Length: 108
Image 1 (cartoon, rainbow, N blue to C red):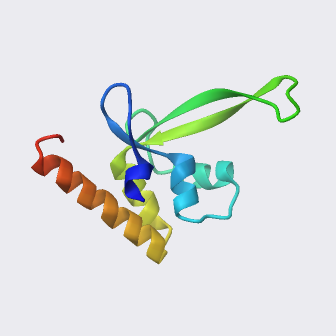
Image 2 (image 1 turned 30 degrees about the vertical axis):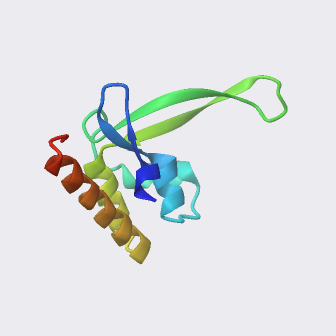
Image 3 (image 1 turned 180 degrees about the vertical axis):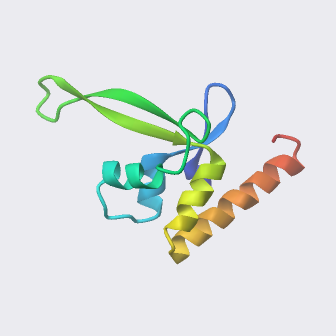
């Protein structure tokens, strides 16, 4: 599961997509509300990056924009733990184990 959650960006940095984290944590709250609440204590460009993405409307006419978030592994661990669920604790632990694996292989 964690291998699907952690992505590698163009610059080689590892990150977690905010929407994927929300889904993995099985959060029912609207994404925008959940993300805004969870990112209050974090700093943009240090702990996460926000990007406006253009998407086509379902009816095929026009497009809309939505914000996507790339979270650092440290931020993703904090948010997972803040969910206060067994699932969140498990995801946090899996990220920690993945970081250990990368550092043992000399790929930090």
